[in-house]
Image 1 (cartoon, helix red, strand yellow):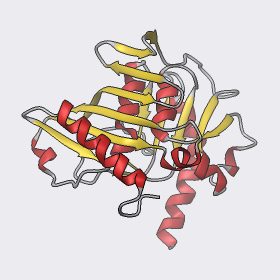
Image 2 (cartoon, rainbow, N blue to C red; image 1 turned 90 degrees about the vertical axis):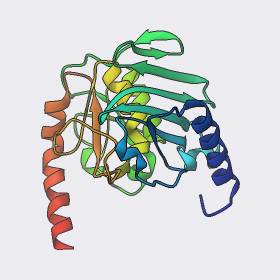
Image 3 (cartoon, rainbow, N blue to C red; image 1 turned 45 degrees about the horizontal axis):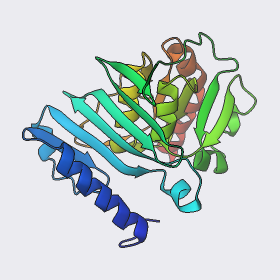
Length: 237
C-alpha cells in the first residue's frame, strides 16, 4: 500500500510536512511514521508523536475508518491528543488537564464495571487472520474495524468500552489515542500491565490495552492465558 511513491505515501508525507511546520516548536521532538527518525527526539522532554494517516487499508478501500492522529508527550507520558476522521467528520481532542471533547462536546470513558457485554473494538485485519477466534465465545461483544487510533478515540469518548491488540504496534499508531483515553479517565497499559509510555528509543510495542477505569484488571486476567501462549510460541520459534 505504501511502496515508494504511490498516492497514499505522497499524501501521508504532505500531511506530515504541514503538521510539522505548524506544530513543532524549538525544544520539541518529532516522531512520525512518515519522517526519518534521527533519535534527536530522545534529547527532548516534549515530543509530538504523529501518524498522518492511520487506517491506510480502509482509506484505500473507501471504508470510513481512518484518521489523522496527533499526540503530545511530556517525559514519556501522553498528555494531549487530537484525532480527526475526515470521512465521518468526527474530531476527538483532549488533554490530561482539560479532559476530552468529542465534536466539541465534553465526553469521558465508559464507566462499565464488568466485562460481560463490553463493546470491544477489534482490528479488522487481526480478525481476518483469526487472531480473535479465542474471544468470539467469551464475554466480550466484539466489533471489527480499522485504524487503531480511531478505535482508541472511540473508547476515549465512551462510544466503546475496550480495545486491545496482541499484535505489535508503533508509538505513532497509539500515542494520540492513548492520551485521549487517559484524558477521558480511562486506562492504557502494555501487555505486562505497565502504564503506557512513549518516546522510547525503540518505538515498537508488543501490544496494548485500553479501557474504562474499572476494567483493566479483569481484562488482563482474561488475556493472560493468551499472552502466555504467545510467549511460549515465540520462545519455540
